[in-house]
Image (tube, rainbow, N blue to C red):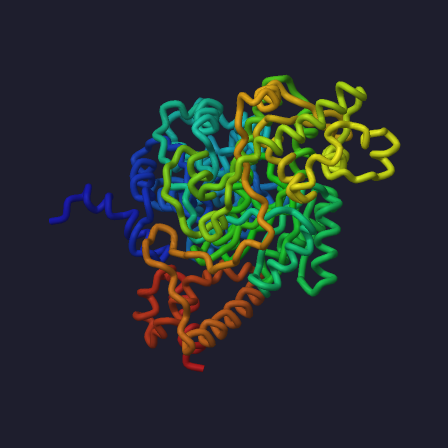
Amino acid sequence: MANPTDQLTDEPARVLRRVFGYDTFRGNQREIIDHVVGGGDALVLMPTGGGKSLCYQIPALVRDGVAVVISPLIALMQDQVDALTTLGVRAGFLNSTQDLDERRRMESAFLAGEIDLLYLAPEALRSEYTLRLLDRGTIALFAIDEAHCVAQWGHDFRPDYLALSMLHERWPAVPRIALTATATTATRAEIATRLNLRDARHFVASFDRPNIQYRIVPKREPRRQLLELLRDEHPGDSGIVYCLSRASVEKTAEFLTQNGIAALPYHAGLDAGTRAANQQRFLRSDGLVMVATIAFGMGIDKPDVRFVAHLDLPKSVEGYYQETGRAGRDGLPSTAWLAYGLADVVQQRKMIDSSDGDLARRRVLAAHLDAMLALCETVQCRRVQLLAYFGQQGAACGNCDTCLDPPESWDGTVAAQKLLSTVLRLQRERNQKFGAGQSIDILLGRETEKVVAHRHDQLSVFGIGTELTEVQWRGVVRQLLAQGLLAVEGDYGTLVLTESSAEVLGRRRDVTMRRESTRPAPARPARSRAAGSAAPVAELSPAAAPVFERLRAWRAATAKEQGVPAYVIFHDATLRQIAAQSPTTLADLGGISGIGENKLARYGQQILDTLAS
């Protein structure tokens, strides 16, 4: 006779196979799920695409009652519910998009225990009406998604998250699981404190996303560089392009459209209807590029985003990691591409100096920027540097630009002394401050109108830097700024010396620099392996490739008919496996990863018919 405890222990595995169609858990999913099913609190750090959702969805189906999922993503709740419904999971939401009748029906379903998961926005828990509603139901657990939003100095702070500490006070017996894809040790401690999760067990998965190829290139003509990337490496692919300003978003989307790339803008300056419509088009279309500010992307479950490109420098490594992590959620090869230049550094430094808050806040922002600059300027493996920021060790990946085309380092001490001397002489001899362009013109001996007008051609440093090109000198300025040996100030980004500058000028400190590449970094296929698996994703055979395309066409038509994103039906990875194996029976089809009982019953015969056509 089976032990009842063993049966209970096996229930998560049965749900995983029956509902989600997977045979094994990934990483520490099973450990997290068992802990929450047993009533424990958990703080989970897991990369985007690593399977965070299962960590609360399976406990929701195993424990008695309804799981309440706190999410800041009202615009995506319908898609999240649709995806679960397609799996046969009873799910719903309460938010401001519903009319009174819809709300009442969902409230009744919650109270009757007729749903397994209920999605709420954090601001809903400020309503006494909502709190009393939850009091009247049976709550299985609270899942706090995007938990980094509680970190006040993080990259996506949401004030409403601060009130979520009351969950433990009002419902002390209900387990809570907070989840995020991005958090340093300090941010994790802040999340635990602000959500009153001090006694929660912490689960930290690997931050490595081996299918993503990280590349950072010198910024020259960024939109042209972006266009080359999309045409040469990602024709017809879905992707996200991040820009710092609304104006840049609009101009970039227009530029791509004019050059034959289907692109849409997304930023806070657009009306809510346009933003929602553009987001839905992106989720439901293949091969569409979304050009956006960082307001876009959190919670986006679209698995086939093949690239994330940044045309402006992110403010922090956490933000960069979160944004690039939206690529390749399906484990297939994807690109994280960043164009980075001197103007980015100057602009970010100016933004910090003029930001709201006290000195301590500005120091935190400066530390975030310094870490981002170190990632950009490293001559070592980018992935190693990125993982180290989150406290994880790793070996050289062989799949980032610095591994594929190792940059040279050089002794830039003399060049640094020349540049710093120019800034020093402008200030001491002429009581003047200028931006980088003027100092570079002086070093190159250019008799520009501005140089002559200010008699800068009379300075002893005039023309002493002709051994480097303008591009190389801009790299010197950028790297001095990154190393804290130079600073910018004022609205015009004028260069000024720092306390550390004297060490270089006094020959007490050497300066090593990354040599500016004169050729584009080679584009090579990214390694790819399904998350949690060491096996690489195989290329489709010539016979399987057209079958995969037929399956994609069937999926697109089915998704359009049902009004849901294509990935809600099946991920590309599942269709690839079907195409490769060509199952001929429902039983064979049911053995493929990602096909649970409900999807097999709903779509199985249609797939077999498509394969036979």
